[in-house]
Image (cartoon, rainbow, N blue to C red; front, side, top):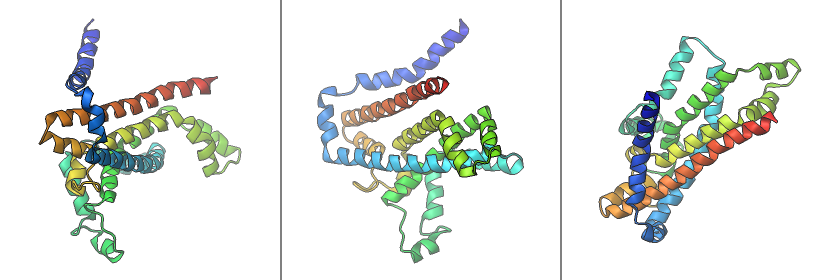
Length: 258
């Protein structure tokens, strides 16, 4: 009884604000709002950058999660802690850290300047910020999956003479495909919702770095109804993406079991 009550309260604490947002949405003008030039530009920019960040985070995160899952010792514990730090950092701290890493006063400044590369206040900065905050989700999700299932099948394939890359392509990736899909979805959703680090590191330049969350914040300073409408668009898209991924996971496992 107590567990059920706590579960209901936990569900309501998440669902109630979303329902309140839906009830406050100006549905009649939502299509016109989404079609506005600045709003459409921000939405497209968010989709493009979040997709790129998702691909990068999933690729890097998969490799790092494999390494962490197969390693142990103090250095592994330290590396894991450092990788997961962005999960708990205030967004503005993440942005400042990125500024110090890639800005004009950064450690990489001489190298970037000699190559004629400018990062801060560019679309690339948006992608870098999104990768910084989404990569830990991929590592956390995949390392947990790897450690829970182990690598017995990979070792069996290797004992039969399969090379490491072939084992990875034909055993590891198919075996953990549902977990990889979920990790990629979390990275995509987190990238779509990124705000603070992007604002600090990339700024809010229309058509260049102003993603949908930044456009929502800007709309909030003017017409709150526009901010609510844009917010529900982002909620709907995130809900669809996450629902598809989490539905696909069980379906994939059922297919594999057959």
